[in-house]
Amino acid sequence: MAVGSQWEHITLSLQWHAGVLGMKTGWDKNMISQIEELGKHGIEMCGVSQQKDPTWFILFFKRQTS
Image (tube, rainbow, N blue to C red; front, side):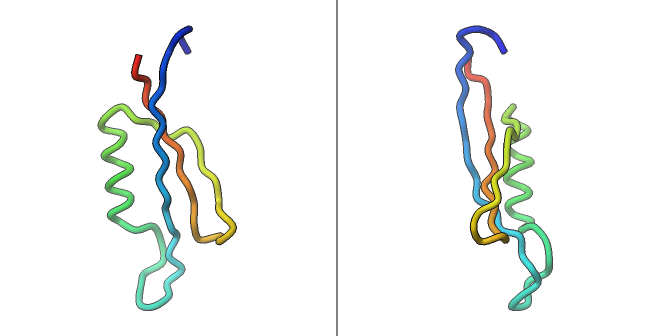
């Protein structure tokens, strides 16, 4: 990392669907598309945190701005 670099940080909440109420098991396809779109703009994933509700996660992203 270069000295004086600045970063833009983004967080995104994402829920794992356990197959209840007619939903299929897995990640929401719209959310996956959003994550892929972030990557196209030079934004990289830098962390993940599982929440108290084990079906919810917070994903952390960053992009170097200078």
